Structure formats: C-alpha cells, structure tokens
Amino acid sequence: MAAAGRGPPEGTSTVSPVSAAASAPLTLLDWHGPVALLTLNNPPVNVLTTPLLDELERRVVELAKDPRVRALVITGSGDRAFSGGASVREMVSMSRAEATRHSAKGQALYNLLEDAPFPVIAAVRGFCVGGGCEMVQACDFIIASEDASFGQPEINIGEIPGWGGSTRLPRRIGPVRARRWIMTGEKVGAAQALQDGFLDRVVPAADLLPTAIGLGTTLAGKPAEAIAAAKYLINRAVDPNRTAGLDYERTMWELLFETPGQREGMQAFLEKRPAVFAAERRSSGRKAPFPWERSTAPKRGARRRGSSRARARLARKR
Figure 1 (spheres, rainbow, N blue to C red):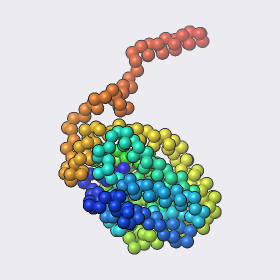
Figure 2: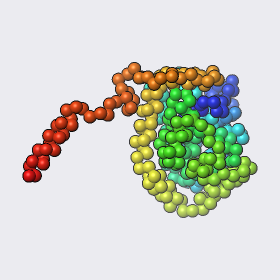
Figure 3: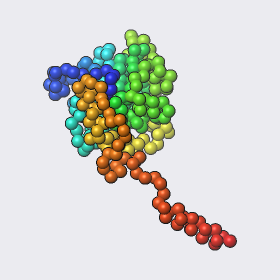
C-alpha cells in the first residue's frame, strides 16, 4: 500500500492535500472517443492521499454509470511516477481501527476498477510502488514504458500490501514471484516485470499513451456485453475466493499496526533514515493474535480419542 523503503520518496510538497485539492483537481478526465483517460494529478509523484482516493472513487463510480464509456485508461501526471503509493504521513499515527478503515477504503476503490463493466488499462511511466502498484493490479491490462519500475515495498516499513496486493499479485505472477516481490520489497524494472508476467507489454515512453488508448479503442469496438461477461468470468475463474482473500489481508494489515516494526519502519521512512528493526523475532505481547503464533499441534487426547473411534469402527466391520 505505502511508498516505502529506500525507493522513491513520498511527495514533500508543503501544500496540504486539502489546499492542493482546492487549487487543482486531483484527477483529470479526457476523452478519446469511447475511451476515457483518467490521470492522477497529485505532483510530484501522485501520492495516494485520502482526498485523491475520494476523488478517484467519485470518478470511477460516475464512469461506470456512463454508457459512453467503453474502455478506461488510467495514468499518472508527469514522467517521474505513476504513483508513489499511499501516504505514509497519513498512516503513521493511525490506530488499528483507523488502519482497518483505511485498508477497506483502498480495497473498495480497487474493487470498483476490477468490477467495472468495461476494460481498464493502466499506462505506467516512472515508478509505480505500494498502493500505486496495487491499483494497476486491479486493472485488466498494464502497459509500461521502458523506464517504468514496480514494487511492493511495504515490508520495509513493517507492513504488508493492504489494498489487495497480497491477493492480486500472486494471482497475476504466481506465488513464487509474488513472495520475492512482497518479502524483499525490491524494485522491479519493466523488463523483469514483463518477464514475470505482470505486464501486458513494454513500449518506448513516447508510445505509452497512444498504445494504451489504441488498445482501449480496439476493445471499445467489441460487443460491450460480451466484453463485460468475459472480464467477469476471467476474474472469477482465476480467483473465485478473492473477497475472502481481501478480508484476510485487511485483518492482517490491521494486526501489524502498532507493532514495533511498523512504528519504527514508518517513522524511519518519514525521517529519511534507515530503519533499525529488532534483531530477534519476538512475540507481539497479545494472546496469539497472528496465525503463526497459534499452536497447530493436535491436543494430546485428541489422537487417542480418534484412534479409539477408528478401532471401534473397525471392530464393528468385523
């Protein structure tokens, strides 16, 4: 979810999100025939602040209801970044309850993109990390410029992807590659992302928008109902339990809030210094809140009772 680690920094503009929203729209909408082009407009790196999420949600809801829209292209303003991810500055002081609501907000928005009745195409230039990377995973196609890079660096601030990345990324590139992306938090260049199966195609920067809009135009020429049906069926074929996975992700993301790693990781990110995490794994101090802290060993009497029942069934058969 967040822009984290030693990757591209979060935007450091002194203008608050509220005042920035008042002076300029946080999203821009253009039309190319039946293809809508929606641009994230929160320079310098299009950090996904709460006001931007709210505005983006309104745009997507309106577009989903507009019969003129046959395809949607999403991109970021400028050539530096598609998006630097969620705002760590907003999240650092959140309680667990607030963190749960924040995760639910991002998940709900990305569900709108995934469930839209038309194809959604991400056109990515520059870096696309954290919540930005999770956004493009909810799109049907990802087209990237040769200088694009991707990543889920939340691990570097003591967290995990919280806007669908832990569910959608394994679905898109498989669990082996997803483990590397999520557990290392490393940056992945466009060429490697294409090889991993994350991208539809990689093009020169000058060709990015024409290629994305061209694909949208091609798809817009297909029967709208059939396109919507194909999208619906493919999404459910590859992950019929998506909703359950998102619920589990949100619970885990909340549990990691207020842990020592999360507090140190986010504070270090804001202070622009290397995070110093505990050298040893330690208990959270609560009663087995995490799945791996719960004992999976069978109770001592359970095996004997099971064995007795098995012996009784065998005796009856004899």
